[in-house]
Length: 563
View 1 (cartoon, rainbow, N blue to C red):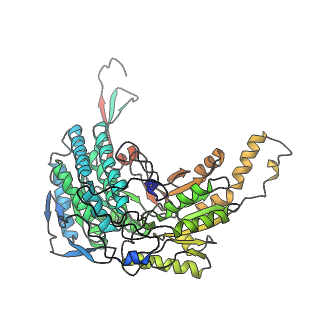
View 2 (cartoon, rainbow, N blue to C red):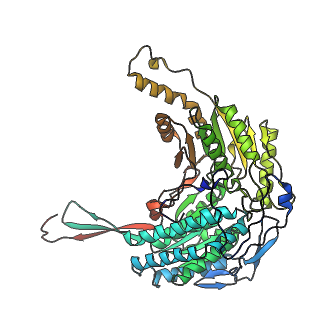
View 3 (cartoon, rainbow, N blue to C red):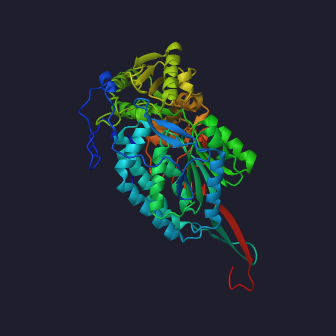
């Protein structure tokens, strides 16, 4: 998984045979569990085999208490128990962290270090992440509720890959020599921006840490990062490994705290040069406003989604059912790119629905540290209650509840995998980002009123071209419905017809389209949205652009041999 190509987050579905990781010297896997067994959820949670050593703020290379001395609890979503009390940073702590980052940028060795040496530190970081994979995965699962198999097999390896990818880019960033009209030598310099503020979410703490910190460091910037209050532990742990790898003090500072205090202070700080935020669209608007009202700092946003998952008439139904299931239920449905509007062609709708319902009923829910579990708890009580509220909305609006719909077990924030059929576009569950294990299956049909000039009998054009035009015309309904949302993050298209795939790819107003696959993430593939799903791109070469500024340098030439 740490190699060049990590093809899909969804390759670890229970429908495929995979090797199960161990904790190395630890062995915590419990006995086999039954599907949809409330007795399983009632068992005492497994004790994670990891020490919590870092609960303070990281400022200028040191772990320190918050200036006000306050802490807040981070909870185990399996039962609501307190895992640890973490330092609660506020505006004063953000000031200290920004000052450390500014000094490290203006006076420290990091931006003045050779790009090759920066790359070596990032490669050493990747090696340390690999060495401590078990502990990092255990922390991530404990704090967020995602399965250990997902943390250890997918997310930590992807974090490692990100650091190696951007470590490789560090010494390959350069400007251009530009020909000009006149006796001038013109070059462009690609310079680091300076101090980057970064705010990461709770659903993928490690991945978002890597997506933001990796390119920022590769470009020579310094960073102040705010963790989500629900999941602060893994970022604090991993940041220590960066310093162990040789990162100078002040280059990476980590503040744990709350959005209205620490987050707002970071977004509006006058000495932060660039801001990156991942979270909800509504919060993104606030962050963008604070950045604009302060110093007009450059902002990139990765926000919400209500992504269409389009299953055409000729699709492989069994494959589409499995991928649609994974696209929605992966990470307990807490995924900005979840395929949360499943559009199925009317001719295969009944078959798809029957198989989707059966697949949901077989999904294994339970302690995320147990072997074979596919779905752990939701992140916290707030999200848990919100999801159950949306399920009630679905029932009250007339959608058909096919599976699930209730709490799972009696402890923790577990929810049964839920499937709705007969969902209409104007229903709340088809419009709002639910961020939970709730699959909405909608039906689409062919458009039959083709214009007269496409009548095959008249043959004004080649038959092949007419067929293509008519086929594309048939897609008008699903294209219009798929695009009828304020979001534009991703889409899935399932068809065996290359013309259909091409037509949908170009018509869908989203930042990523997956054809006959879903959730394919690679360090080199850019990710970001259209419309209110954000601006800018993360990962790949495009991710570097967020942390660079371009300077043109013009020098007169005297009697040049050539121009």
